[in-house]
Length: 163
Image (tube, rainbow, N blue to C red; front, side, top):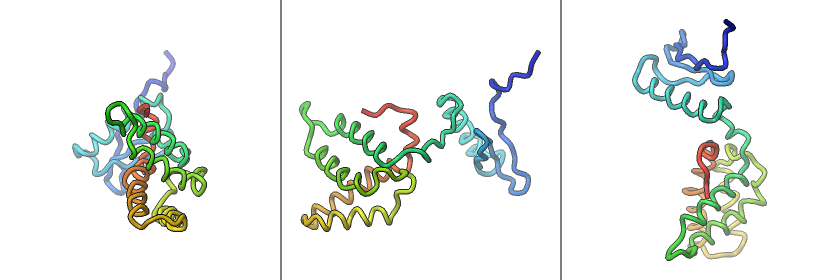
């Protein structure tokens, strides 16, 4: 009987030098914490489940997702979330407005590369657009707390439909 490696699960292993647990998914070593602990076993189970759910593709596809893709997904989510009495609220429009500022600057950039310097550049673009300080601060907050949190974990786009 031939050895069918396509049905095997990645092994929970111990890194000898550090004593940490690790798993190899698609050729990439992922460290899970101290070997044998409940936390490392839980992380192993979660990562392998995500890997299986994504049809054995790397869960680190976030390296390929652009800022524009994350913003499009978030705008789709916001259109359904920011509603009152079956109508889209003003908050949705403000989210779209801040995305209009970000897109020309960072639309083609990778989402994981959007960091503090990028946020400062977006804030400066808002300042240059000659709007009030209060509006700039609120738009920067929208960008920081809503969009940037999505840039940091865009892998969630692989596992749930947004919109």
